[in-house]
Image 1 (tube, helix red, strand yellow):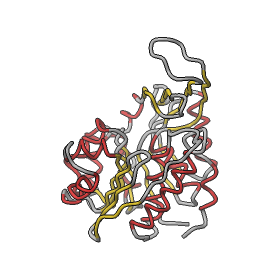
Image 2: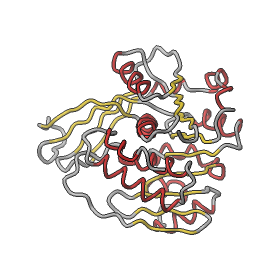
Image 3: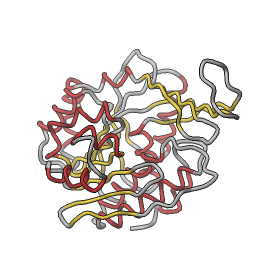
Image 4: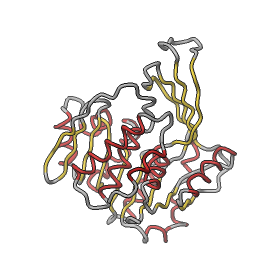
Length: 296
């Protein structure tokens, strides 16, 4: 069993629609709709649990049937869960994919995550003394992020940016982060629009982040730390099923290898393998990642 990890972030029910033909706006498009468990940190949690990690997860789950099924699935994976007792529906994520399976648009209703607040975390303050490695997403309120990082400044913080709008919450805490995984749009939100992926990586490192990884869809992945900046060549994948969860799989692989003291280069290479496996899945996570669970 690996280093214990504390994860704090969102859980959602994913509704993913895939158009049979080219999407047409303002009309009903014929296609398929699937329901699965998702949410950035929940996806990361499941992936890390399937990779044989020791996970404690602070998240917000409603009392509705699908929310309770989501909770049971994680408990069955030996995840220890702490959730506020809230009378709100579980978070939901509605994605519309085009006939090439690329994301066209999405809506996320995650009101319940506001229940992960300072008051709730104070009730569970004893948890934080048990962990050196803490993973955060950007769905958390900025006040909650500030409380965690300022109250426990000597932890290793691993952050998934999620979106350009949400990652701005970390602008005042970048020098406290051990890892940030973001896409090129999220990186530009933090340091500037006119920069190349290489320069974005360099600027984020200059702001004090220990490890930086920048993805760019089907393009190359840039990564860097105090040992320098590297590039992982990404080859296009044909006949993939779904892009939802691929970035979460990338973050999962990075965390999995960094806590085992692998180099950042090795972590990026492993993480990319996980993202490809997820790309071939119809949902945001897949049991297929378990083939890597005994890799140390």
